[in-house]
Amino acid sequence: MSETQTQPEAVLTKNVGRSAAATKRKKPIVRELASGEKIRAELNIEKWPAIWTPAHSKTRRKGQVLSRTLERESLAADGTKNVSQVTINPIAQFGDLTTEDQRTLYTLIKHWEQRGKPSHETPFSIRHLARLLHKRGWGSNVIDAITSSLERLRGTVLVWTRSYKTKDERIEQLETVYINILSKLKIVRRKVDGHVTTEAGYFQFDDHILKNLLANYTKPFLFDVFIDIKGEIALKLYSYLDLIMHDKIRFERRTKELFEELGLTGSSYRNPSKRKQNLERALAELQGKLLTTGMLKSARLEKTKDDKDYKVVFEKSPRSEFGAEADDVPEKFATAAAVVVNDYSKAKDPALLQAEEVVAHFHKVVHAVDKHAAQSKELAQAISLITRYGLEQAKFVVEFAAGKAKETHFAMQHFGAVLAYASRAAAEFDRKQGKAEAVAASQAVRPVATTSPDLSRGRSRVAGLTEEQYRARFEQARAELLQELPFLAQRQRGSKLEQDMVRSRLIRQLDSECMDLVPIELIAAVESWVRPAAARPEPESSNLAA
DNA sequence: CATTGCAAATGTCTAGACGG
DNA sequence: CCGTCTAGACATTTGCAATG
Image 1 (cartoon, rainbow, N blue to C red):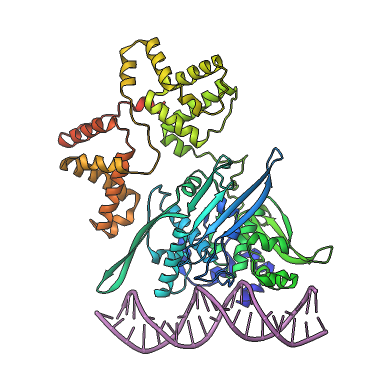
Image 2: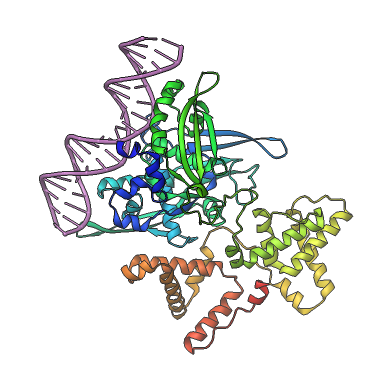
């Protein structure tokens, strides 16, 4: 312990990229799994390190947890003040969120990434998590620690007021977002002869977090370095520094403010000397640690000028300076300027592209704005419009609404205003076109496409399948699933878990399929099943892909 | 009064007994 | 042999009282 702390810098620079202390410990399997890997952590959570309290903290012991509110003032680009808040509401029986849970969360993200970033439930086993967490032992204590950590992540409600951002840097101004970090959690202990032999279950991140993770509203993060940090203050400090120093070589801060930022509220931290006392240990541990954007060259304490406090001073040597891994693709942080647009997900969802097109059209026609980052509400409205009337007609609705609004001197602000004109515009469109196909389109008025994850539609569709159809779809879904999750094929053939997973996948598939396509597609599927023929392409696919 | 060392509180880790 | 259970070692944060 003390050996690793007092390692001279020279030694560390030699072993850079491998974390000198960690390589010495012999853990071949774990090492192989996790050699210097980066994960991408969700940025909103990163920005509030005070969410996590030290596990040893006595200020909030188990059984008497209270909700706490973090607050921060920031100046917007236009000079207006913005007070953002995060309230943490822990559940009494589980206790408050600790740095241990922070470790668990990153481990879940890592596991989720290794599984190919599924947007649905991610299967996991506690044992696997324990390995990823570099837990040394394995026993009921480890199981308990991980289980209760997961429970806290599932149970604790984070209330974000004017603080939860999405990829396009838009803050939900008037909205308050309620988030449980995990929205789904199932822990299964499989017992054979009274022993827990295998464990299976699944988790899923909250939709908000999942969306940001998928859209790359994230920050790269050196998982291994983080997980091997022992001190809890050092741990919090590390993740704080990693974020704040990504574009800095040097960073300093008074310890008083630093402790507030980190959420260390112990009463003895009133005294600068106490802060110094505890920081010294943490700084010693952080010395020479790798950051995603370089190496922490020095971490020290200095007296402030007014002599009333200490300040921490951190210095980083950028990656290029010490050579190792300099070939890395320069890491991009999700800032306003450098958002990595996730083309993949967009290509996958042509409906979204169309919706964006319609929204953009609205802003161009009404507000004469060429570039507009569509908001999710607008997109949802646009999608419902398109589902109802089709792309062409939806665009026409926008134009029609713009025209009418001008006539009546109604100044449309939001895209939603267009919706009021939809039916009139549709009638106008039909009249203009006067063609049979237009009539047919308007007859096919469907319920507004729902964006909620309510799968009742899918369930009822599954129920509506004949046994043969069901089996065909089931096998198809199973094959897809096994391809995604090879471990299923190896370990639990035909198991309850597998069946459940295939079934829920099937439900999701059917649920998300456009209603009109279902019968056709099903017929095609059954046809190809009865007498093998090339599956017919979806009739509207060419239109959608445009 | 600020600083400092120490101890209480609270958590994790580990070895070894035990059991199917 | 593998896993659980448990006590005690160990680690860490924070409160407190002695100290200068």
